[in-house]
Length: 109
Length: 112
Image (cartoon, rainbow over all chains, first blue to last red):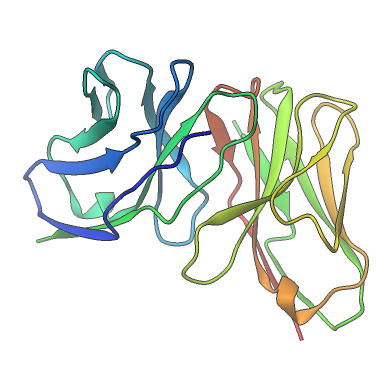
């Protein structure tokens, strides 16, 4: 499975959009981009995933570049409860999820 | 709607003791996983079970054994606990390997 690169930390003002980048330049054609988050010491929570097209659900939007080498997770109106570690994972589903270090997002009042 | 349930939530063991961490899911999922998370670190995969009747090693399997008891339950056993196994253990399940995974709330294990 392809490796991902994420910034270790980011800040975002409450009520503003949080844009979390992820680089996955070695992604293969059959690999999906998945995003999870982990709030404090809880179990990780699935957010969204995509293959080629942009995706949106009630939690977030996922923008994948045309060459699929990078993506951005967008939380449209960040709240204090969105403070968490966000993991970008690229995998094909033939092997289990492998977590990197993620991005620690701090939402500031 | 319980999802993934882990027991116990907290445990303190002495070095050399054994114990089994229990995990059960009520979503009729085929695949189940065990991860550990050390302080300030990401999750590392210990073992997984792609489907009932199969188990495979992950990144850090040494010192652990697993049993896929049935489709619902996947247990993790520490035969002889060591301080290096002090960690938070998460169980997860997914319908199949390439779908979203649901995680339990974790078992916080301290080995003294």
